[in-house]
Image 1: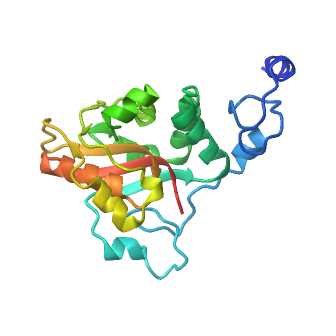
Image 2 (image 1 turned 120 degrees about the vertical axis):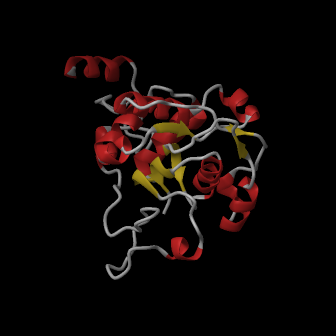
Length: 233
């Protein structure tokens, strides 16, 4: 493997997407091992609902989860949306580097306890709109979600539809995000008495996860939880 990596770096010199140094070891594809090892993990204490890191050991919920009702029961994330992890998500999401999905999948299963995934009866991905799906050619969340479902031997149902075009969430405030996503997801499939795990790439305010959970609960889901590659803090 070291010989192969050496030949790759010699004939196909590639810069790390994060630090821009030339990669000598392609274990993590487009980022160097040094940057990958520096990815920030979710460390306790965290909010018991959304897993946001909190400063105090005297509370078990963040201010946002106290102020705003969440339709999902819990959500967990494998790491912090920064550095090499952010770069890998961007490479998959915006540059079509589909091989990155395997790296992100492995990162999830190494940092999220199996019991949390195994709790579910089935797994669903957050969908893209028809317009974005046509432009991108694939749904990165679906690719990662299928890998997780295969790993946990759970049914994977890509049956939630995004029925409206929306503005990019990263350009909006929390209140604008909630309004932007209100009523955008729909499905005709029954989830009666099913425990459902939602898969997404990045968790920011929870607006997407909340809207997805509401649709699932309206269609009979017993309980909804979430799992994402990263969270923004």
